[in-house]
Length: 233
Image (cartoon, rainbow, N blue to C red; front, side, top):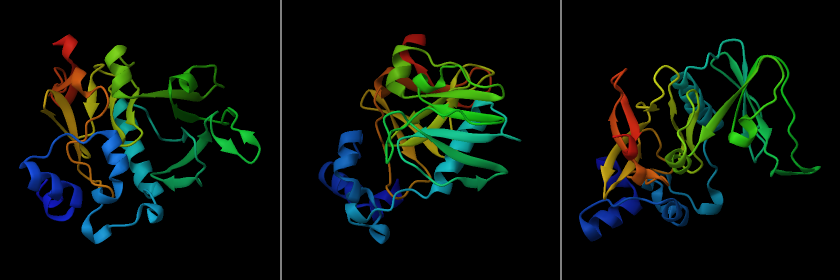
């Protein structure tokens, strides 16, 4: 947080005006994205190259491991709306499948099942079967959806503007945080997140949709940080 106050214009402005860092909403982050960049990495919005693919892959890998999915000997396919070259990392090839809403030269994308042993990470509509033998579907969910229906063990917590943040561990059914990347706390009646390894843009006290329905606690089985619905307390 101290580094953000020193180097990121958005947080410097907010702290100078109020003496606090209020929750950062998705809409505010979108409108002020260029002000969430550190001063030594500031870019005009039209020149922002986005996240490096390997950084995104590392985040996804950690979420899959947290959920208990074995990665040895399988390819991982992520359902997206944008094409990306395959990435070879951690002994696995990381590919994309275009979502049905993705626009390509040939029109909307079509669901094409992968060959061979694979994990397919996508929204619930994609995670539903049927899939060929050897293909395992992994559902991802946002916190707003989890507030209405408890996500299944093995699923991944994903917010499009923040990335992969945690997973529902198969052994306990609790929503575990990826503590190497995410710190959660309560602020103004809801849960906010600070992303520990993201600098471009920098997220401090980011407020995910549905954050008011969850509170940070400890996993009763593993002892690690989890988010639990206030209805379960």
